[in-house]
Image 1 (cartoon, rainbow, N blue to C red):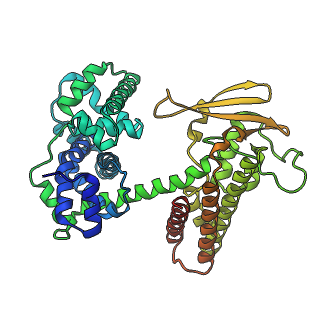
Image 2 (image 1 turned 90 degrees about the vertical axis):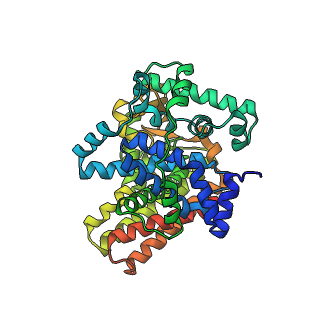
Image 3 (image 1 turned 135 degrees about the vertical axis):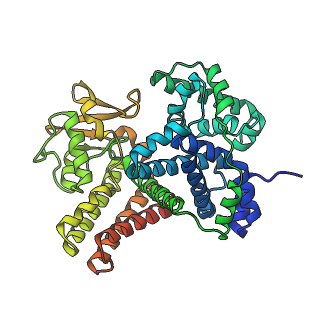
Length: 449
């Protein structure tokens, strides 16, 4: 009898709520989820809670997953989020208890595996999605090369190339952590140690919860809630990613408005890094004037993109003002953590930035805090008496769909501001959460067309 694929089982569960289909998914992938949770948490009880939480989340999100989703990859990433949330909560409750649990519950490993273990999941997270999925299928689920290719929709040769490339990147990551291991040794270690069987009865308990026949524990419910909040944050960052095409991650642009734009702004950046610092403050405080003072573009695509970006910046400023007027000025500070145009571009590590200046051009390279070997590069230009970010070399990202999404997000923010003014929300926190949801829906709708 032909075994149904993950996609077939997900489609059946999403369409009919088939308990049989969901149970098949759970039993097929529970060891992957549990082993990942155990490596990260180093505690079997926590790993069990995380495993339950991950499959509860799958049961809720099954209908929204694309037919192209590689389920082991999705489960692996979700497990990482859930385990991180569980650890965060556990640290808050009892740091000393956590440390004791880490000592008492980690299975004994040989010395080389002990070296690799603390860094493995960080190294996996750093891989490109295709490479990570290939490694997960080959080693974490012990699939044959042919099965890996079938799951990824590629030939055996292409699957082998992804596995080889993924292993080499894992080795390089570990090397940067001063863990010396050859690709051959890493292959053996993964094959020998990475699979961990989930406790007997876990699959049955998870299926009972998903079917509504059993309630989740308080700890599992907390992990589910925290992880779903992480998903919301990721969606918000996806919205922000549209803006990163014009702000920072690929450069920014100067808004060309009516009138003479040749005059220097009231405040100019005297160094390329100072321009980045000003830009970071401008987008986080929703200040369109400061934003314009440190960005530049001359092409039509760059001008169009930055125009819509400024529209979003102004909309956020209006929402912030409405929040302060309806509640208290102090509550407007809640908007500091909500920014649909500021994307992470290394602003938290500008102190380590390296600048190369050649005449009126400069490149700023900012190392990643988590992996100093990785850097973000930003092209700068000296115009009108000050340094600015230059977007004209990156206008391939100036798609009509992105511009439409910007406009839809700005409109959603303005609608939310009107709702605040109309006293729709009893607290500022409620208003901000509603804003997040509205912006995500608006962006997702525009980008899916």
